[in-house]
Length: 218
Image 1 (cartoon, helix red, strand yellow):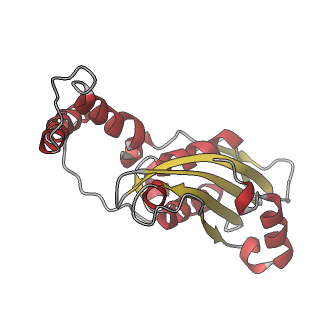
Image 2: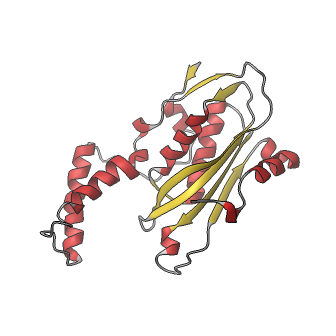
């Protein structure tokens, strides 16, 4: 059993555009609360109303502790890999992994599911760790293409194989509730490598094992 070094993994992953501001989580929450108070006041909302009074505090806590905690490297999930003692050489597939993120263009929700497959080489990983990796990269302002790449790149590095496939299906609130206001469309992004890209039979087997677009339940 081997513990994965998060720093080594994240060096191999397409970065999210961030800058280090040296603020603690408490300092971030305090500043966000102050700034969101100003936004609400600018909109003409009455913060003395008992329904609105705590909203800036709730938003600051939500941003730092709940929906954007994946911005912090130290929150990368603790992951151990084990030797593939059984010499298992077929695809391990997990579908419908809850993938809730936020669009970095409008800061509104992206609601989706991710489907993952890999063929073990020398290493295997606990199934729940796949969910945790997806959740970590989802918990930051995102675009779906980058999110899919980050999940794929992290798994290739952790599992020491290119035989990895990742597909993400998502509904975007920025499309559903503003602009075009299309309530029915969904977006699918994918990154396939190794045998899933080069071998038609592996690719078809994986794609047939995941839900069709209209079958995804968000």
